[in-house]
Length: 88
Image 1 (tube, one colour):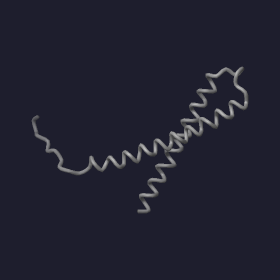
Image 2: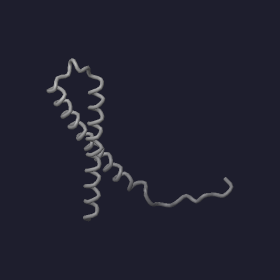
Image 3: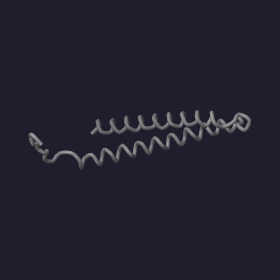
Image 4: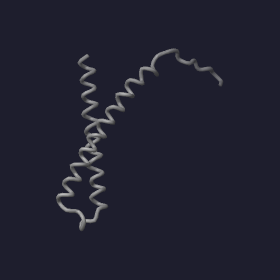
């Protein structure tokens, strides 16, 4: 049982890293597209924080999607294998 919890923890941490990286990348896009004349240091700082928080939220959604995939994979395992017919 401990291995399962360790695997879930690794999935959660990996998902959060991906989400934060997404937030950082999209902040870079925001930083390039918004003209510097209208961007104050306060706006830039709060936007960066918001992008990181949204990225963490995306990481949670990625984790939930992975859990759904793990749960759904149970329905696609096992059963009879189809026999291949030669010459068809």
